[in-house]
Each structure stands twice: as C-alpha cells, then as structure tokens.
Length: 153
Image 1: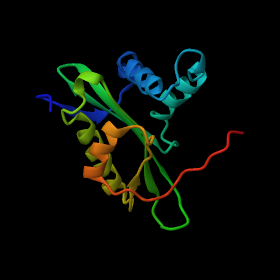
Image 2: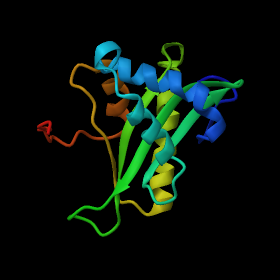
Image 3: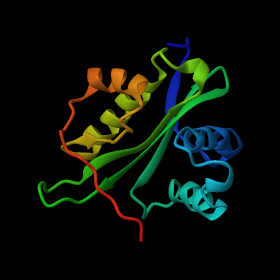
C-alpha cells in the first residue's frame, strides 16, 4: 500500500482530479469514445454526492496529493431486511496503484460506512472477465451465486 494513503469523502474541490478516475473506470467497462456516458450523466452523478437527499456517496484514495482510486456506493431498501443494503456501485484505481492495497482500503472503508449506517450487507457486481479484481474480491467477500439479468429500456 502506498505510504500515507488516506481514504476520505470526495469534496467539491476534487472534481478535476476525480474526473480522470471516473473516465478511467468507464473506459475499463467500454464506455468511452462513441459509447461514452453522456456528460449530463457524469454531472448528475457528481451532484448526487453532495445532495443530502440522495443515498449516493463517494470516497477517494489519496496519497501525496494524488487521487489513486475512487469508490461510489449507495443505500437502498429491500424486501429482505429492515435496514437499507449497501451497494458498492463503482470501484476503480489507477493502474500504478493496482495490487498495492488501494482497492482493498476503499472496500474496507465502504464496509465501515455501512456498519455505521446499520446496513446488514454490502454487495457489488463485477464482470466475469475481471479476474484481477475477483482475486481481491474473493478475499474480502463471498460470491452470492446470483446471475444478473437486465434489459435496456
């Protein structure tokens, strides 16, 4: 892990440093170039982090003034628990930080936030081809066995 790694809530002043991480995350999942997210989606995502009525949160990993990673998570109700579940929506680290504990630190920070919020579970999805991430996830959580189905509308 980089020395002096800090995991903290994103601030409005972080936008210019957060945006390349967000763009990197989206590029990793094929959302770049002609398939990039519309700018209004990025703008709305960013604004939600600072809206007290939104259940969406963002943390960043910082070392020596450089943002090395991000994690976005949200809380939602479910029919199987009273307290809202925590969904880890996005996780990304710069390539140079991979394998150095930054992703683990971001996930563990979400675990701590979920504990403080009284959430009974944190869960997330990853693509079946993302073997590098799965090697970490297998150490930090259990696979649910569920398969995701979706249909664009």
